[in-house]
Length: 130
Image 1 (spheres, rainbow, N blue to C red):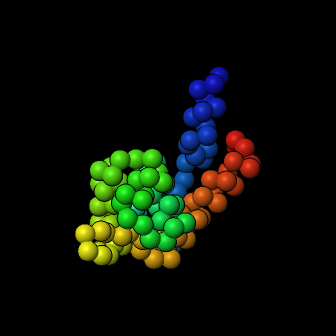
Image 2 (tube, helix red, strand yellow; image 1 turned 120 degrees about the horizontal axis):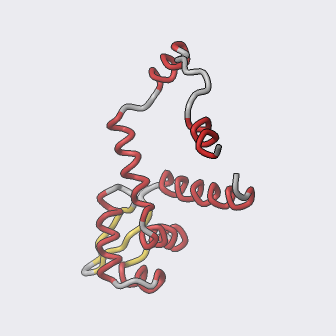
Image 3 (spheres, rainbow, N blue to C red; image 1 turned 45 degrees about the vertical axis):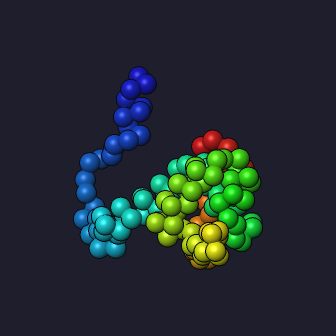
């Protein structure tokens, strides 16, 4: 029966809690607030335009909205909205030069997160389906 095979994959064969392991993991588990913050950070990567903007800034270092829009093939309005979200989340920083605003990646942690995410994706593609 197909159903029983699926059920056995998602449930314990011998339902019993290993109290020592549960206690050890519970003590080191991140709290709900930190998990929420991390989920919000990863949600930034849920939009392909924002991802492309971030990688554009990784390559260029610093660009204004119109340059970013030209690179990623989006409207300046869409890029401006994405920049507001990315800036609020702390992923990018900006500086004003007269009427122009230039954006860059906030710090090396953002670069590391993007590089590792891309490597992970490539690694999964190399191995194929599980």
